[in-house]
Image (tube, rainbow, N blue to C red; front, side, top):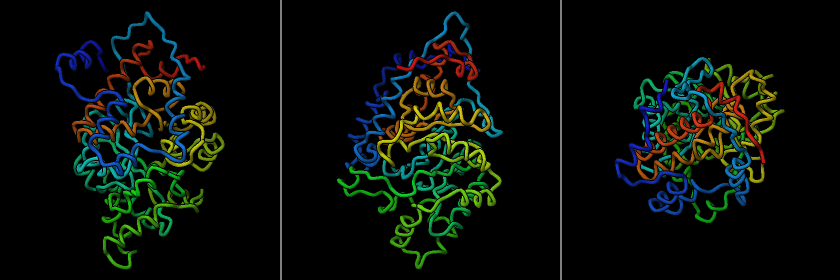
Length: 381
């Protein structure tokens, strides 16, 4: 139970007289001053003309919270139970790969900051550090593993899933919208690929099945094989059924935007969905994630959890997504900008501020728990 009267981060920060980036624009600007054009462009940019990237954030402006007042909101319970695990709040760290391009400590810094503030951490397949390295640094914290299906050898996928299970991870998140790399003009312009520069090999170079599949253990061979494996145009429901046979962990699929796919997921026995358009980084011109959310929630009808990803920039965004039916929300780019601008400490500031803003936004809307958040009335322009 959270007591607002004893956790006023706003007053604490004002009194501290410490200056650091707070909102998304300031964080991005600070990261731009720190990073080279290649890494900065890779993190900031999205596919095509970035129509989807803009929609993801602009579409939040169409939804307005209609608050209720004269309710005692001195205490707030943000606990949420998902797939048998209870978390202190419905805020997750979205799976973002190659974090080392933002800061040398990469995923180690992000996962440790997440553990400090109770954010379940979803680790990317293309992390700069391995499953086991992250687990060793964050013992006792909640972690999920995001899987990119290995197109050349599905046994690599099964191996990584088994490693995650052995390391105490709580769920598998299979990303389904990366059958091939989206058209990203900024990366073409900068001639920059983190994978080809070896930043995403933490889980591959430590995997016995992957290493055994190589013709030789050279760095060039590792990088080339990762690039070959990560894109999977043949991925289909049969593969997901095969994945089910190799793990006892719950399986969520990330990248769902169509209610028909949500219904199919339930029919196929999927344990959860993450509504996402990959932050606009895959197919440009698609529906904003927040606009896709209500129909998917309606199609699922409470049978499995529906998480939300893409476009979350502040606490009020999270409240809107939760009010539209999301079980929890995932935060991506703000975290990486915090990492770039200040390492683990920068991520901690982002998460602490985000958590506090979300709590305040919930209480000011007149809600005292997540069930009441789901009953909030939103006006859509």
